[in-house]
Image (tube, rainbow, N blue to C red):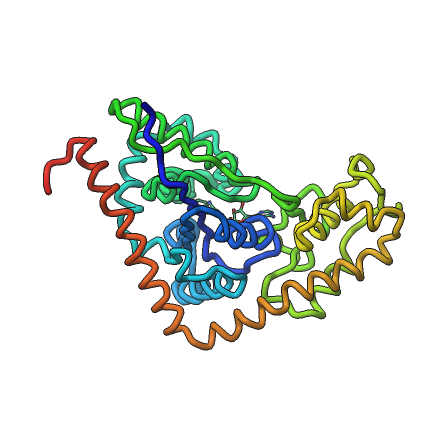
Length: 338
Ligand code: TYM
């Protein structure tokens, strides 16, 4: 009979600086929602993933604390959820090594995030950037996590995690790792650039006008939305009317996700309006939702010691779950020792 696993959510974000509205709507806001469900929730600042591309040490320290502040300011309760940074829980890298031996070169060669990040510079990319998805699988499976909320761009990595779990179980003749479900839901699973509706909103885009940062003030948010690229037509009343209008679709998706409504419900309200009327509505909503978060983040950042304490405690709790799972994995693989 198949093993039943505790419903458990795991997800992670890289502390590589500059949280965007994409991170918020595609990930953090969903993490907060799942905290209220029947799941155990574990959220991680994946600093070991961040260093697969160069990070200045002082920046990494600051960005890790800022990300933790962002989680808490958005509504992650560090008592209810386990909140920690990856490098403090060595079981991730220990299981990651085992998964390096399970994952196949061909599988990793197909990963689009590696291709995007390495670009033409493949020969000069770090080995860690290539092996990145095996460590991500370890992040998830060291907790036997059953559900992983992520944005659309991480789907391929979660699918690889499923392949690794299945191959491990098959090769060792066990039913030990769950085949984890990606949870990619809601109106904003892929928030696009404000300057180009065919490109993902990203912290690495050269233009700051392409994204809303979680630390932007009200004026910056309003200005970026006012200047966002659109088309000349009025908004449609039905979802079909957004077809072939990527910029319009993006702004409506952002509005819906931020207001916890479906795209259909939003269009029923705003259909027929011009962007000159819709953009100020969106800007007001974005400011109302994001400013309390950025204010709270700034307040929390004044107390880095408190943040470090929260991370320490989170790591202790994380290890309580991870350590027996690693021990059992070693036994399955045939490692000698206690
Ligand atoms: P990262 O740090 O690039 O992004 C963190 C989360 O934000 C989501 N996201 C978006 N969602 C919608 N629209 C966007 N424009 C957008 N930009 C980012 C991402 O999909 C992600 O959910 N590999 C992961 C980190 C990771 C991880 C894990 C995630 C490491 N281990 C284990 C889940 C489980 C990453 O680079 O995310």
